[in-house]
Amino acid sequence: MFLLRRFLFLAALLLPLGAVLPLSAAEEEGGQITLSWEDLMPPGEEERLMELYEQQMSTMPDMSLIPEGSAADKPIQFGTYNVVEDLNGKNIRIPGFMVPFELNAGEVTEFLLVPYFGACIHVPPPPPNQIIYVTAKEDVLFTWDAVWIEGILKTDKHLNDLGNAAYTLELTKVEAYDS
Image (cartoon, rainbow, N blue to C red; front, top):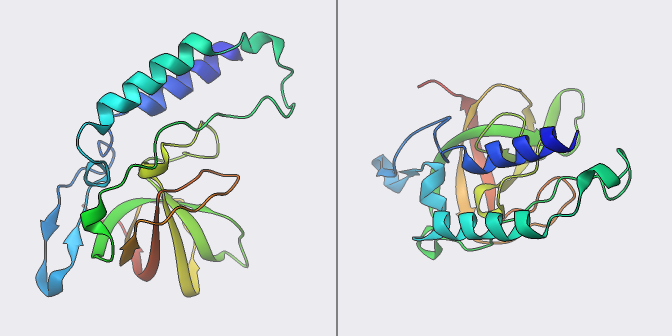
């Protein structure tokens, strides 16, 4: 189990951010900006993540000594809350996957948006600056498929048990992802 967790942890970290849903930042009509996940990281952030990963791995305890299912057997989120301040208050559009907090008849009003399928549930969460905490005024239909979300992005932290987020977004639109 230890090797599997370590592999998943490393795979999640080294997954080229945005490789699942690649796009680059582009201004659209009405001042909306289409973002990729890389656009949420300030310059030099990928190098900082690799340094943090190396530090984490050098101090990691022998996971085989931790009983499976115990409080200590929890995926560790690491990374930074470093954000791109220029995105604060911008109307954005970004693709990703929904991680719901609570489902009510298949609908949600708050969820995490993450860059790859399964993040925060089966593997350690992505870095905080690769998670967006999303709130909706009205229920939206939950899906396991990739979605586009639109709304006003804020550089506000949101701390929770699934994965801490460095960004928040007030949802204005969600639709199926279509490349």
